[in-house]
Length: 324
Image (cartoon, rainbow, N blue to C red; front, side, top):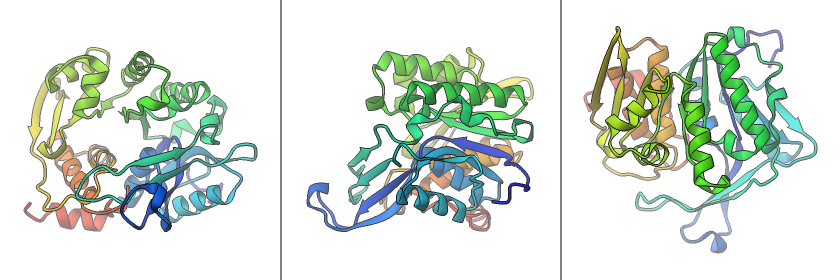
């Protein structure tokens, strides 16, 4: 990346890991052959937006090891601006191992990420970011779960991006096993979500975080705390929107896109986020944003891999013009 080139218009941050996906079915203990890929909810969204033609930056750390080099090369090949991807000589790159998905069921995954380079992210990692050039920041609940210093970075990123006038999106992406307690997870993520414009929980996530049952009540929880819009993923049933438009509060549900065969559900929510965020940044109205989110989410579940189904702009426009 030429340091003299323009800074990113969109920024995402978090942990990218080297992922090994089993080539054979069955439990990981019996698998001998794997394919190497990259993994991370935050990177899935960053890659999806880059494929649609946005100038997207990635802020994180990787280890000074072959896995970190692989991640950097893979992200740059996807068009991400990696000027804010640091190399940590003291801590390793995180790894994840994933079973081969079968019959549409969620595959088992195992992580080797404790003490990873990305878990040592801190507010100082934001020092080189030109927030004045930033149009949008995407955040998830994963960095705050990695460590106290990474949580401080998340808070810093949201505050500085908002102060600079950028729009902000937040996907809770719950990882309960990384938190000390469920209460800590709820309090931390709800406080972060309240600082953003677009909150994108799944229905089960929203119920757990807010203690409320239906989409309307979950949305109101975040709208009452400062969010501009809440967009709830309903799985195959589609998605729900509640927020302001032209000074009035509106809400509606957009049906899901039918899928003949579900291959791998991992990454569907990230695909949905790519669709919604890109459409809103394109200036489309909320209903069309949810339609695009549903479409890309449906594409994601029809292929193996976390981000392999994310389309480029040409394919998206072709699919969007085809009756579903």
